[in-house]
Length: 181
Image (tube, rainbow, N blue to C red; front, side):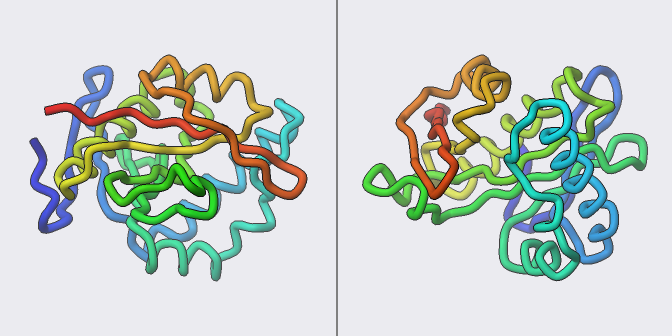
């Protein structure tokens, strides 16, 4: 198991290549911004879904995101291949289903050219270990309800549908997976 107490980078093997996951730094901002903007544009153009608006991912927004959240970046052979955060509070989406015994995965993104290579699954496993090390028993996340491919992906990763949040003009499906020893 990776020791997360000192927040040092960790390495894991992915398809015989090493992937480095570490806490995001301000120095990562340019690459993180490119990653999220590319993902937002791709989702809208190829899926017809406005899950993320690329205008949201300003440098100011992302700097605040990195400073205030547990944000992690992943590099493969020196290239940023993904990013995600783990949050400990997410009451606005989970409502009465919210509890403190979970880590909430947020803004998980994988560089498009690595689609289907297991990076998202690797992130979920890594995050599960991180959440477990923080003494929590559940991994939780939400995704756009009108994104059937992503919803099916999370189900295929062993997450269980827990409900739906209806926002103003959008909805999210809520998923969780119990962390076992």
